[in-house]
Length: 423
Image 1 (cartoon, rainbow, N blue to C red):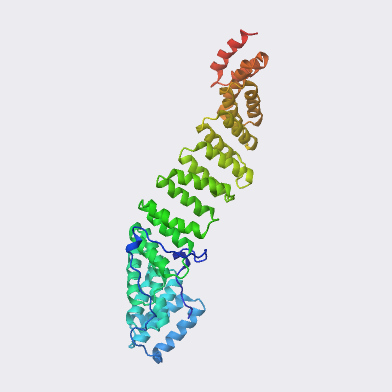
Image 2: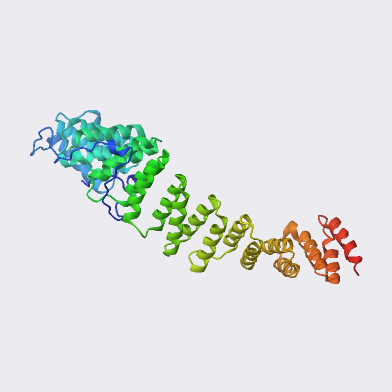
């Protein structure tokens, strides 16, 4: 029979860089680390245990069906032995165990859990299967979304198994976190780290995050520093440490770290550049937010597209740098499918009274088109810019065009009166 393993989805990755952790926070320092001993056999089992002949005939057919992946047939064959159990505990255990596997392979995890419970209750499974059974019991309850039952099963596993897998403590921590009990999850996560000879990076990150969820930011920083020490070139983890500094109101530490991350050239992924820009933005560092995005484009880490350049323009707007707002909208306009960004560029240049440049931007907006309801407005502001630039004939033509749109007609006529006075 194939051995059913704990689902990989239940665990954090086991393939990340290993770390050696010696962590004590205000919450982990009181966590009890259980002694790990060799797995005891528990109740003495008959090493030569065999199925009774009547059970064996049915069980053998069921096992063949299982190997052929015909799980409904397995269930059909073994159901009579479930309803009228064999005399021997060993027979009962093996029947219930195989039924559990068949139900789990059929995605019926509630029944799988019920049958593995019955198999474990006999205490007659061979040691290896008994150990796997406890682990699978937790898995089945989790897959059935019976989280409280899964939690109880994990605690029973700890009382029944001497050589506990550290990963099971991590599963308990994850489950408690899912049940919105982050503080209770801290000790199981810490125990998993302490018991494993090579705890993984993600395990430490989880421990840091659990502290952060209950606003223990200084403790979270302590743990996250262990993560970054183990992976000094991991930009995601460094950014997370910077974010924790901010949450702990240690802004000077945060921004010093952010500057260092970028100077080291570690921000080569789009999401990391955006994360950095967002962190600057959220903390009112708008100039740095825009600069991070611009440098990301220059390094090729960030795509130069309309949306990115509009984000840069918004950041410079918050920083009150009109020249750079106009530049960013111009770059957005070059990459856009409509003239909207050029319209925004022209309006900013008009605010700066750079009428000649504004005229060019408005003309680009009209050439690109796709302005929808803003088309009349664009002709209006173009005419006004031309008027202010003393190009009166061109202004009249643009304003006459603007006057053909209902939304801009009145304003266009008003400006035309001013233009006529100059002709």
